[in-house]
Image (tube, rainbow, N blue to C red; front, side, top):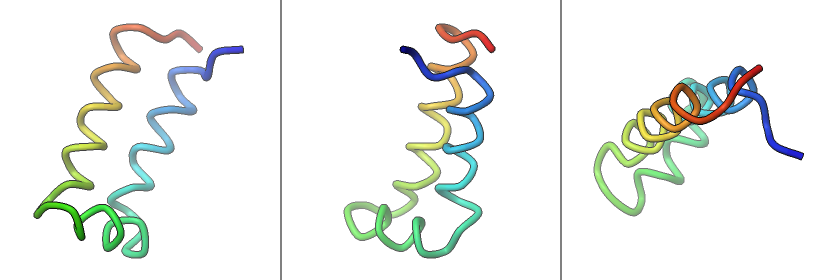
Length: 50
């Protein structure tokens, strides 16, 4: 089963909205959480449906 577009977009937004997730991602590289969010949003918009 594939995740829906809105589900993946919601999870990607959580990466930057919740400081706990952002802190974990940004340990690896500055603004990594934003990069992950943007990447997931592009993927979801191009390849997934609701």
